Length: 437
Image 1: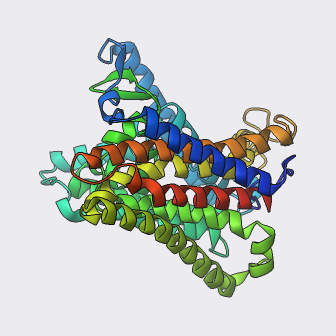
Image 2: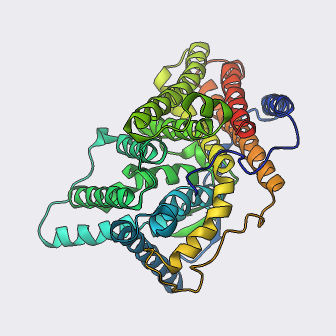
């Protein structure tokens, strides 16, 4: 099933690992040199606002389409939740696992990074929270703003729990386990909506916060109801960085890295096929170590930059945190490209029989996955280029941010040397996982 996936598990790449490693290091090095010569002043922040693409400020037809999309997303959410709680507990017969792990987790990252923050527009939790908030206000409940020091730590904690369910929990693919977990998560969101209003979801709810960060690199964005287009990556220059933003990105990056490692030859030799709660403990320790590894690499780059520029580490960290977003996006596409292509078909089949009760609502319940829709070689090349371009994008953003720092002191180019090595290390790690699954 779809949880038994690994990077590149449908086939090997036509070139050896050492060749891809040298090519990746060379591409990053050349992009670094080219940026140093040609990109001599900050440009991304100025380009981030983009230009107007759709002039009307949400006319009636657009509002109708938006609310229909929200209604559809809410209906799917309730259907998947109901299937998880009351349907068959077999993964292959239930709509919830494929919806949560593929359609939402993978699909919304892909859509967010290429099109924009569609999730924010249709988020079913926001739709429910708006209703709860309205009822609370009508009942005389005083809705307050979230505490200023809350930051995005709730998002980081929620994603850590999600990754534990996906990667370590002994029954993390069980529809019943996922159903109860989603129900608890929903209740927490709605209770907090009564206290803080529905607006808190965008920056604090785990999926919403992550998808919004990834959407910052997309060429499309909406400002005051108007659609604008901008150069890719430019939105990262104005991405808000709060306490917990870095933790959120590092947890996701570490989780994706660990997921790939577990499915690699080295990972299978080290972990085997752990089962039960003893296996869950082993996998949890591995997950934590993976997060600590990617955190340590990033921390080395930050300390070097801080020492060269003489600037405060917190300021440097806030400046460079958005440069992780393209890496998170590239790792997600590389790791889950095969999963998305194959299991999107499963999602459609499951819609015909969401609870595994023998229904056939759309005539697709008996469908089988066609593994040849996209060729093995094409998937493999998509994976490689996703990692490579993710890191080139990160180098570009880091270079632009360092130029902003140079106005406050320090040698902007020299300050990036170690950060470039960090990017190379991330690339080599991603390619190694890709080629050793």
